[in-house]
Amino acid sequence: MTAPIVDFVRQYAQSGTSRLHMPGHKGQPFLGCEAWDITEIKGADELYEAEGIIARSEANATALFGTARTYYSTEGSSQCIRAMLALALRRAPKTGKRPVLLAARNAHKALLYAAALLDFDIQWLWPAPEASGALCSCPVTPEALRRALQTQAEQGTRPFGVYVTSPDYLGSVQDIAGLAAVCKARGVPLLVDNAHGAYLHFLPGGSRHPIALGAAMCCDSGHKTLPVLTGGAYLHLGPDAPVQDEATVRNTLNLFGSTSPSYLILQSLDQCNAVLAGDYRARLAGCCAALEALRKALNETAAAHGAVLPLALPGDPPDREPLKLTLDAAALGCSGQALAEVLRQHGIECEYADPRYLVLMFTPENPPQDYDRLREAITACCTARPLGSAPTEEDTAGNFAALARELAEKDPRCTIREAIFAPQEVVPAEEALGRVCAMPTVSCPPAIPIVVSGEMVSREAVTLMKRYGVANVAVIK
Image (cartoon, rainbow, N blue to C red; front, side, top):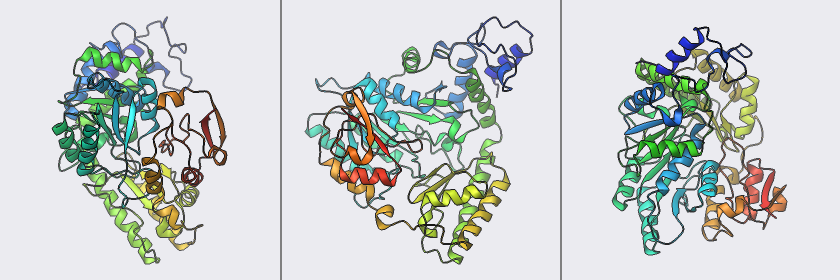
């Protein structure tokens, strides 16, 4: 497969042309990549008015992902999320009421920023009482969604979209096909934050990508799981996307993007097409098989040292995605944060750690020694137990579910937009009790707010903030 953006930039870099244009480094090597860092010169095309090499590259991506249309983002899935919601709002029902989005509660804070900018309300889909208490997970069944949509209809409200995160940070996957069927029956588009699942279309056994499963639109962060520079992402449209007009989609992406998109990121998205069209599927299958073998080996090692719980959570479909190796640190009698510190001592940096879980993200680009190093590190951890304080019952179950029950019974004090743009101050979490949350305060990862802008900070929320390391909270003055 061709890589038109890469080819153009390489030819330009080798042409010896005097660069009397931006950027200011003029192609001279300071970091080493400057020769290929250009701006919208003649022949380079323009991302938001693409009709040349960028358009051809996006057409290649569209064919590879099997979508109705795929567009590039150089500002991550955050740009795509805002554009996706803005596009869905264009087809919002004319009810005379404020537009409403139904969304699973484990949403990235980018959703709240979009709600503030676009000024819509969110009705949250909460996890079932029996579901995991983890902050990162919020499983939504088709039946639960059906009931939620029916409740909205009885209240005279028709949401302009349903929004779910799948896969989530711990590797759990929603029943996208089932949710899409419910949405289609109700005439509501299903919007998916698939930031962690760009590779799902290329899995052995058939695509598990949201668009293939019936989602109307989704975003993928190419940089999270594919060989793409940080910031490279995709906005995918399915056949049922509420807006298909190319000019409208590009203008909407432009609304939330820089007027100087990175050509380094565009080249990495372009080159990734060639990778995906090559032997990527075979290498991905090999990576999945190697990870499954690693999970088995880690669980056997933990069991041999007296661990009760499975250490490595399964990566099998349909409920899990295979490239995340999620470790339940409770099996080793410690917290996820404590296990992360031990792994750092063995030269391993994790993606995410919380009071119970630790997440390691693999791709086909990880060399074999990474698997060996992790296996050796976990063996050492098992031998050296105890590693730290074991999680309490509150740490391992029910935290988020308890907060869900509490917040589900209360209406927000103000809209998300009003809260985010209100005069505010940052106070210690303990002093935020009874105050109204302003800007969501949470680190990335996982960037999932415990309290949403406009909600009152409760005692349960303060407890969770402390547990997840949130020391300060922005509240309305």
